[in-house]
Each structure stands twice: as C-alpha cells, then as structure tokens.
Image 1 (cartoon, chains in turn red, blue):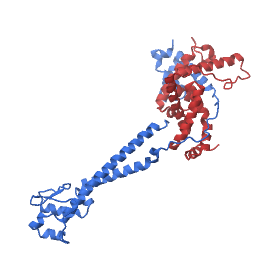
Image 2 (image 1 turned 120 degrees about the vertical axis):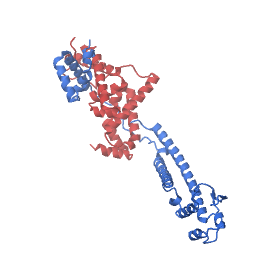
Image 3 (image 1 turned 30 degrees about the vertical axis):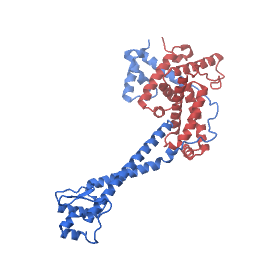
Image 4 (image 1 turned 45 degrees about the horizontal axis):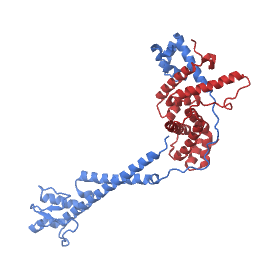
Length: 194
Length: 228
C-alpha cells in the first residue's frame, strides 16, 4: 500500500490515479458518514460523490495533517448542505434506513428470531440517530460508530474537544432513553431495572 | 423516573460518558468512582450507557454501493482570480512598501535629501538667509527674502548663466538682483518636490486600485471556496 502523503502529493500535481487510490481507501467511511447523517441511500451516494469531487478540486490547498479528517470534514459539510437543500424541498425520505441483509448477515448460531430482533434493533438505533440534532449525530457517529478519537472528531466537526465531549454525552443519553422504550430489543444486560 | 434527571445525579451525567471512554480528568474520575461506589442507580445508568456504546460499536459498516473513484479529473477552479492572485498581492505589497518608505523619509528628514541630494544644501542656505521664513516645499511660489512672492514656473526654471548659481557664488554676493530671482538650486528643489508629490499621489492611487482588486479577488474566492 502506497504512502498516503505520497499519494496526496501526486494528487496535488493532478494525478487522478493517485487521487483515486485515496478515494478507494476512504470511500467506505465517507459513504457511511453520509448514510448515517442523511438516512437516504441515494442522497448519501450524491454526498459521497460530491465530497470526492470537491476534495479533488481543493486538494491543492491541503496543507498536510490527516487526509482522512480533511475528507470527512468535506463530507460532513456536504451532508449539511444537502440536508439544508432537502429540507427546503421537503424531499427527504421519512423512511427509516433499512440495514441490508448483506450488511448484517445472520450467523450460523443466530436463530431467525434473533436475526429479526437484531435487524429491528438496527432500525431502532437508526431512528434514535435521526432523532438527534445534527451536530450530536455527527459526533456520535464519528466516535461510537467509526471509533475516532475525541481530537479527530473535533477536527472533523470543526469544534473543540470540550464541545465534542458534551455533545457526545447528550447524544448517548438521548439514544439510551429512546432505546429503553423498547427494552425487548436490547440484550438483557443493557436493560435498566425498573 | 430517570435518576440521572434528578437534580442530585444530573451533575454526573457528562462525567459518566467521558468516564466510559477513559477521558475523565483524574480528580473528577476519583470523585465519580466514589459516587458510583455508593449509588446503585447511577451504576445501573452507567451500565445502560455503556451498553448503548457497545451496541453502536457493533453496528456494521454498510458496504459502498459503487466506487466513487473519479473517471475524469473535474476541472479545477482556476479563474483569473487564482491566476493573478499572487502577482496582485506582491504588487500591492511592493506599492505599499514604497509609499511607506517615501512617507517615512519625508517625516524623518523633513527635507528632500532622500529624494534629491542636491536640493538639501540649497534649502539650508535659504534658511540661513531668511531664518524667519519657512520654506514651503509644496508651494508653487517661492518667496524672496524681501517678502515678495515670486511666481516660479514649476517645470521651466529661469535660465541662468553657467556657474552663476554655484553655492560659493550664491553665498558671497547677495545683491538685490540675486535676491529677487530664486537660485537655480531652489528652483530645482521645488521642481523635484513638485514631481515627487505627484509620484506619491500616483503611488497612492495605484495602491488603492490594487487594494480594491485584491479585496475583490479575495471575496470572489471566498464565495467559490470549498468548505473543508
């Protein structure tokens, strides 16, 4: 695997092949961020494509640091713009994102009932994510789903680590309260005792 | 009833989230651990919160439906603003520095020496001859020591015989005729000053134009800039 800095440098000189290697490397994270933020596969595709086009155009101004943070920041801004436009057109789908069976294959040990419950839990989590304010949703996605550090999440969300910490706390608490309304979906150890 | 929402326990809410991630400051961590040791409900709340985090960690990564690799290079925005951005900035900086240097030179010396080295001795001599009268550097008329205003052509000084206006001569014989007609050095000084004022004005105008261009270019670039 080629060094990221070298790929960035070649991309800055206009080499599309080098840039596409970076795209292949980060398109999963960009698409998943867009999907969780927009809850619409078609919009998420648009956001991901727009992100990489914008990144290619702007890479001349990239001054080092984490390329991943940089491109995810572009993605977060693209989602924000798309959400704003979709809200204006009121065209955003209210359908909750279905996690495809390919994304969550049933294991051999898992019974059909458990598999259905897991899918239902996935939908419930997505509903909970959608109920969160956009800024809290972004931070929760970055830290709890993508596993980023507080510092990297702060860079992507363009805010301070302290703000990330408080947004994350509020987002987790809200999601916990929402999920506790459907305790039958939760693994027993996560249920609150009455 | 959510115990965290009660006033007594609410203060721990944010700390618990950071505690789960190991991001709590040591002194707060100690205080929270002491509280958790004696508060069952807060312990349960923390476990429920930890459960949510675990569930989120387990969420699968959705595979991309297609490749987002670019088939052809999108046109990079290279308008005139970007092409001329650097030269414009350099030209503006150069004009500003030049103007500043001239202004500082004027203020520090209060003499045109920096501009026309040959003009300084003449000005000094003139002050010796008429100490009460300050030499008006920007005026188009020069006053004789007798107080009579004499119109001085700005660009066409009165022709003088060669050698008639040398410093030695001017210092020695101070006749009425000599006093009535300004010395060639004075004429040259005022002529140089006159020209230099126009250089300053021209530089000022150039600087203003360049500043407007730079500001316009910055504003256009800001509108087009990709947010990242």
